[in-house]
Length: 455
Ligand SMILES: Nc1ncnc2c1ncn2[C@@H]1O[C@H](COP(=O)(O)OP(=O)(O)OP(=O)(O)O)[C@@H](O)[C@H]1O
View 1 (cartoon, rainbow, N blue to C red):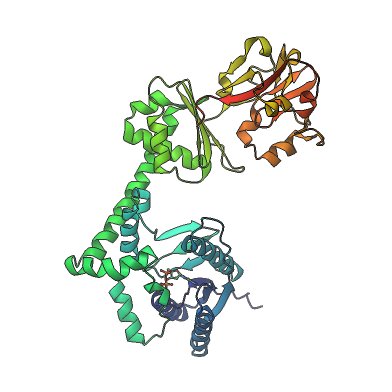
View 2 (cartoon, rainbow, N blue to C red):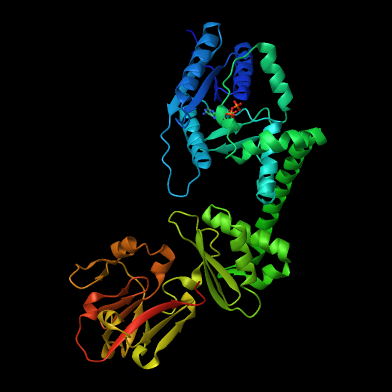
């Protein structure tokens, strides 16, 4: 009985048709032939350039020729429509979509490794571009040699190779490749660097490529150390109710800010912008006991020396939220409040206050309720199954649907609901229930939910 023959392993090469990926694909096919594995060349057709169809044909034709000569190679491609949202950059969106498509194609062809043809010159350029943007060590680390993402392993086997070696390889083997004319477009920062700044730099500093790539490698190590230190520091300053500000401050600004950055990133999956970090840091000095910051991906609260964080989008990890126990709905609820008499009630567990005021105009009046209703209200936690009516003549809908329709973030949905007897009167984030506003009564009051220090 013959034993089953194992299928040869397949590696993928991201093949744009440019000089570097042509060289990498050629070299990979040569080695694969000797060692008995398969290569799949992956090409992404972006359709951004008029010549994109020609590039696709060129790449397909090159692979066909190499295969005819005995190369263990197949060709795969994907056409990508570019759907740009408002404010998105073509470059960034094309890159994101390209990596997704490459991963998809690799998996479809049984390849768990995708090789990219970046070399030392690309690494040096990336370092410089990051430095010009004012990046920190994580950005200055530039491109990793190996990384697992999108379910595949990305490898840059030539990251230490000088550009000149690749040029020499292409000449030696007489390889034909595509010269992308958009590489001369000065609207792109990388092109301006490559065309104007780099030749001048390299003329004055012949070791620039090597030196900058080495600096990127140092930054990659420094970024790893900073991450490890942040993990230790966060562990030391975290408690049930969030991060202790004073314990963080005692670490000194560099370590404290490093930990805050890591804390935010772990919870939201995105970096904390430098300006946002500066605000958090400067606006939470000694003497500030309650404050809320609405940052791009999270709401951060400071209350009695504790920082807590709530990601704004669903699905973000809550693990690093500093445990928002103080904000959980059950804290202190239900609670009876003589709201009409008191005028306001501070609810520090929600870093907010509930206030009443007399209506200033007809608009306010339409959203007001009779004063008697608020003589004693009860603040209750949300139980599920409540309904809320947004305006007169509109049907009451489930509170959950109303929150969703109004885009009330998950953390704000934990605020208490205001009841008069069994009537739901007011919901933070949504306002007065129209059924309560429809009740008659000569003396009217408006209700508001005011987060402390909200920007
Ligand atoms: N359209 C594409 N299809 C497949 N792979 C791509 C594509 N564009 C880029 N890549 C991969 O990403 C790497 C870096 O991209 P970059 O835009 O710097 O290269 P390029 O100028 O298009 O071509 P090359 O690096 O081949 O000279 C390429 O070497 C290649 O491995």
